[in-house]
Image 1 (cartoon, helix red, strand yellow):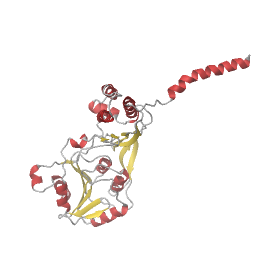
Image 2 (cartoon, one colour):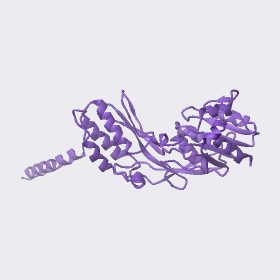
Image 3 (spheres, one colour):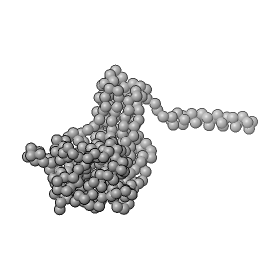
Image 4 (cartoon, helix red, strand yellow):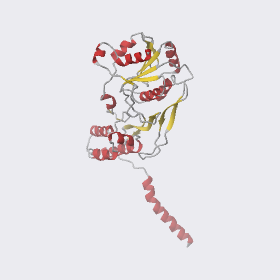
Length: 340
């Protein structure tokens, strides 16, 4: 009798466990337009990191987005039509780090730079650099005629080694001040940005904070973790610096501007940066398309959001008169500040 009762008890437990197991299993979507729509919405819902911030800034409601876009999806639509709808939905996040990639197209949100003046001219850049400038890794540099050093760093995807930085700063060592032009720098390797910034800090300095997702809820984050900039053990710059920015400064370049802004001998000159402060991650849809999204939010040293960029210390814009005369107002303003 005891054995029979034990068998019955075990059977009851197994029956009760069946629905629990089915609830724990991850729901997999089928490779159909509706299945891919559901998969994409869920990936963003569980992993994206700026929902609360963007709800506060412009009223983003991801559940409302779901309802509005779901009616546009049908299993009879083509891949091109589905791609367009999914990209439109991702555009609601207003995030340059959010992309949808397929073999036929690359979905992106670039209004963070497209909707604003460039405040940069490659024609004028060539005028200031001339033809006898020096090249060290991803850097181009020279001494301007008023003994101001000028470094142009167009992209942090172009590597710069410690030897490159030593040679560049040694060459510019006798200059009265230094301009670092990162306008139109769309980012790249964050380690490279930190390596460059480390040449301008002289003690361990708090420059920003970061969080990481700890769960699938919109508010599931780790506590704020401080990020410190360590001074380079190689040659460092001790004089004044102006960092030139515009709306196309994004991602790692935006983070470089955030780090440099904390230093006492540095001024940001130019236009508001483009932002992009979330470290990106990627995932795949059932049809093989890849979605990239911001997963870990980063903040400045005062724990303020920088996702939509930061303002310069000295705001300067291009004007037609100066451009016609071959003058870059942002570079000239930086030169004036450094000569003072």
